Structures are given as C-alpha cells and as structure tokens.
Length: 530
Image (cartoon, rainbow, N blue to C red; front, side, top):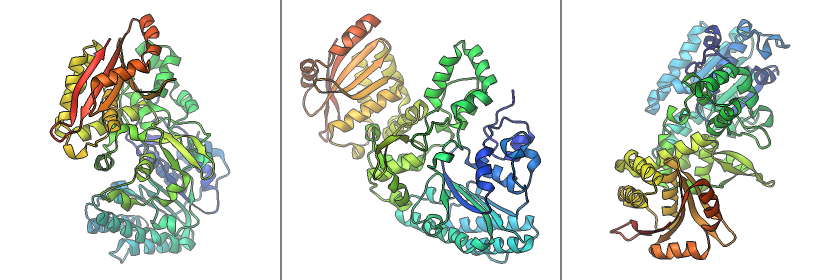
C-alpha cells in the first residue's frame, strides 16, 4: 500500500516520496489548456486547495515527468515552461499591517531572486506589479499567478470593524494590481475559504471565473465514493479485517462520519480528504480529524457574541445571490445578522448544500455535512458558552446518568452547566433553553430529535441513550407539571411505547421548567413519569 500523507501539500514532494495521490488532473487539464484564464475557487480549510495550487505550479513549470501515469500526462498539453509567481498567504506572518507589507515584499523579492531579477519598491502592491512586468519581459511570455488563501489576512483580523476595513482596503489595493497586469498574464488561479464582496478580485476583475459552485468542478477537491474505493481499497480491506466488520457496514460508517460535503446542487457529495487520510493511517479509529486540525476561534466568538445556538442552524436557507454580497467587515461588528452568519458557516464548511428550495432567486437549504462536523461543532459551541464552567465532567455525568435512567442525577448535572453560563449570553426564550439542552445532549453523543411533528402537535425533544427514551417538554417560567400534562394530553409518548417495549427500553416522560429571573436563570424543577 502506498503511504498516506496528510501533512505534505507540495505535489512534487508527494510524488517523489511515493505517497498516495488521488488523481484530479483531469480537472486541471481542462483549465490549463486554454490560451489564458482567470479562475477562483473557494473551499473549506484542509480540503486540498494548497495541493491543487502546488500541482498547477508543477504543470506550468513544465515538470511533465512528475505526472507519469496521471490523466494529464498523455493529453494534448504542450508542457511549456512559464515564469510562476506563487504566493501562499498561509505562510505570511501578518500580525500588523506593516508586518504584512514587509513580509509580502520579502516573498516577492524571493520570487524575483529565483529568476535573476531585482525589485526596487518597498511597497508590496508596487513590487507585485513590477515583478509581473519584469518576468513577462524577460521571458517574452505571459506570467502564471497562483495565490493560495487570498482571504487569510482578512479572516485573521476581525476583532473590530475598523481593523477589518484596514486589512480589506490594503488587500484590495494589492489585488487591484492584477487587473492592470492583464496584458502580462498567462493564467491566474486564486483560492480561499470565502468569497468576499468589496475585494478587487471580484469587484474589479470582471473576467475571473468563479468555479466554486460550478457543476463541472464540484468534485475537483475532496474524494468521491468511486475515488475512495479505487485509491483506498487496500486500506478498506485492512480496516475490515482489523475491526471485524463487513465491508458495506464500514463504508456506511465512513460515509456517516466524513462524507456529505456538497458544492453544487444535483452533484454527488465528497469526503473531506484530511479526515479520510487520518482515519486510514491512524488505525481506523472514528474520531474528529478535520475539525480538530484548527479551532475556528473567530467563528465561535461571532456565534457567542450573537447568541447563536445549535437549533438556529437547523433547516436554514441561503440565496445564491448572497455569495456576491458577502462583506467581511460585517463579521467584525457588534451585531451580525443571521443570514451573514449562515453564509459564513457555509463558506467555511460547517454547513453545506442540501437542496434547492426555490428556483428564483435560487435558494438553498443547508445542513451539517456529516456526523464529524455536527458533533464537533456542537461541542466547540457549547464549550464556548460554558467558559470556565467546563464541559468534560458534565458530559460524562450526563451520559452515565442517562444510560442507567437516573434522571434526577442527569438533571443535577444539567443545572450545574446552566449555573456556569454567563448571564449576558442567556436569552429569555423557551427556545433558547431548549436549544442549549439539545446541544448538550448532542455533544454527549445521544440521539436527539427536536420539534418532532405528530398528529396532535410538536414534541419539543426526543432523546435516546442506551435503553432509555426521553420524551421532553420544556417550559419557561411555568411549571414541570404543566409540561408533563401536555405530553399526556397530546399523547406524545404513544408512538414510542410499543417499539420501546419490544426493544426492552424504558420510556420517560420528562417535563423541564426553566426560570429566567435575574437571581435564577436555570432549571428550577422537573417532573418525570416512567
């Protein structure tokens, strides 16, 4: 079996070291064979953007020998060598705007030095334009421009609207150079996590082709089911032997955990490549890999500041037009509207396309891509809310108590959690407390359904753990008696009793009452009928 690398993003190194490479060059062949082209692709982090840019780098440097056995090798591509400017903003230190400029200048000077050129400017934008012209004149050909993580300087500076605008304006002037350099460019490929409005590559480059949601390129990054079987077949066989499970059962579990990312309606979903790689090389253990490779601190801060809870993200919608109007500076404001937050969650990969709901304007329903993302997102969001209260002991206590049907102890742990929540993030809303409880149960690995429709109404929540099924009704500033009475009168438990009896499970009717008074803001009573 070829070795799997999840930490090498250089195509030449990956091939020379004999590592497994999932051939995506048929997509690259399609975009490089044109006489010229400007392309942009957004994908979530750790999705193969840097490797894609590195592969394009090798193609335009004419390194055909690296591609032997791959799709592009025998195609009618001329393999002509071009001067390449490759800028990876993931490698540029940028704590302050002056530091960003100085380090960008060093990157450009390094490229110039590789081609025997010297730059005169100490301003990055000026040096950028100068380098493009000098390379084109020296080699009498168009220059290839590859920019990876174009939006990182913006995403790293969202503390205040003023800071966000300073970095946006600086990067706008830098990217504006590309438009003026059009006569000197052969090919441009830009990647990022997000597509920001009011940045010059979108507002001024009217010839850039955004392939992010193009059906033709929807599976260009990430792994399809077919690619999983073709390239990881030996690993899958080894996993079935080690885990002692049938192949189909293993594949079903892998899909549940790591598949589900969808970048164009009507096109198949893809697996996150980092999650698959780490699962295969890490002993076939189902764990959170993609989410743990980088904590989305700025995102969690935005969610907390705007009091977003997990249920706010169920069955959310996004219009196709909203992508073109997404302004990074909004994320740094004190109050961010829900559509902007939803758009950010989509672009960063925490939500993905489900299906088209409306044709004009095109409106998508979104969902969590898979179990890994939803579970990890829930845990991180809850931890952000919990702050110093912590969650590890509470999670273990709830799981243990719920598994043996000790509802009193489970609710005591729940009270401990709410006691640690800062008062200024709580909302006087039954739905808010319902959402937090839902998030806690999901984080505990319990199966939870909320707002479950019946012929008589909607059940607030149904939670299953081990041999116990909880039918839950929430109340705010009312009474637990009233909650259980509603379960009885609406006959919410009826559909669960017979299946539970056959499976040897116990059904619990649980009414929970919260109090929002300043001195309480917690669970004040609960009532259970078994």
